[in-house]
Image 1 (cartoon, rainbow, N blue to C red):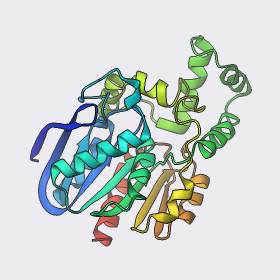
Image 2 (cartoon, one colour):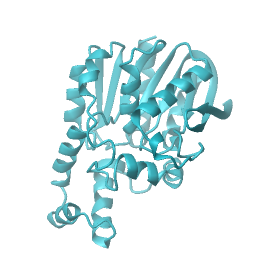
Image 3 (tube, rainbow, N blue to C red):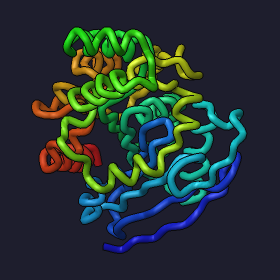
Length: 284
């Protein structure tokens, strides 16, 4: 499996990228989640490199990329510009994009601007609207034991009880794994808590950072290219909201993974890769 990596100059600094494979089908560009949660956990998608190049990058401020401290850089608009700069530097004339979680918001913000060359969009476990995310999180918290609900509502982040309740939320609605795979542990280790806290906030289920008013639902009808939405049955990016988002696209399909939460890429890996691979083939 051929690998090529390097750095690209973008607004604010240098970002790291890697290209896996050398096949000539239209490449797939991966946009990771977070904000500030680097690419490593998306590693299973490299299995699709037998057909096409798989391009990963770490958004500025996390992972292998430079880590400036200027908070004015941590905006959705700048991350969209960063994505444009990467595509231009790599000379991509045609490409697909897969955005996971926060990466879906970034991918949508890029796609509705009618960027030439984008052939399809895959939104995996998508964050698209803060109001929908928080409403769903409130309902999911309501499925936890009552004592944990009270602890999370209280919001004492440093308490042992809060950490235990938060861990339970993550197990049920994010990982749904008894132990994390090594690539996800690498993402955890290289994550930028500074960016996450600045843009999102200290909690997964309440948005108090600069994204607190983000709602991209009005932009979805403007995206005319084939779109695939993916989520898990127990996903914090719930099937109900994902289904609603699908209805707003002119040309979208959806798949729910029945045994997964926020990472069907790991919990139902083979089916996930087949669904993504088949979709890409169908739109080329």
